[in-house]
Length: 328
Image 1: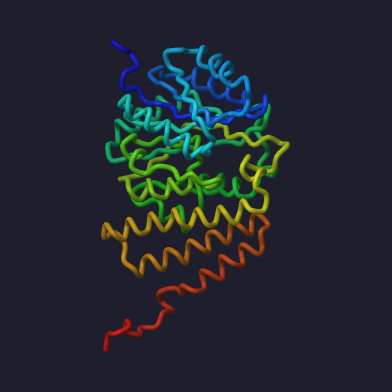
Image 2: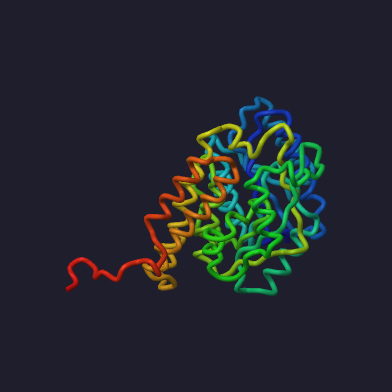
């Protein structure tokens, strides 16, 4: 009998294009091997790494624990969303009760699986969990708060003010706190993850998925005693996609985030949990929340555009009571 049958699965997307990326993957995997709860598997989904030695490198990683560590290689680069979707399907085929998303450069808290398993068992209606995190540099050292990029600092401050929990958490996240569920802190019941895959976008594929997962699930929970290590090397100003895309990053992020938010809102509308008036107000507040994020990032033109879009949807108290077209 397989002692790891039906175990939770860490889903680790990976793209090895530099020696440092492989070093980060090694450190990430070792943080999984340090879990206090040994009842897990991990699937490393290699997203067509261009390194000619990728097969040997991946084999070396898997050899650290052949029973728990498994490798899938995609034959073309589809981005982290595509890799995570493949990992979720792999986990579902092995009847994993839940998946834990783990980016290949971040570090997992040694108690992450244990606390996650307990919380899911204690709260059957909770199907999405996340936790706190600290920003670490390329040497695994904490980065001072004043050196953290504004949008990430915004997440830390929102968690300190009081993490969002409960049903329909997508709404306060989209309209009040902003993005809070950092990918390497998230665990989701496998069936829910299967129903709401990540889009194959270059940015914000995680935020897009979280909005839809939270609207399609029963409840969000927060693990206060688990802290992930979120890596932002001091040599960069933010995420790898932010570095790669430059100015395009923010316009693409706004587009993808809006689509994800509208996907959640229309799901709530279809389910009768939201009225059309509620939806209009939610969109207005979403644009204002995005404006704050853009302003904090020094993107004045983007912030002004978000405010202009919000102004098209005046608050309910300011709306006239004109009848709908065709109504006398």
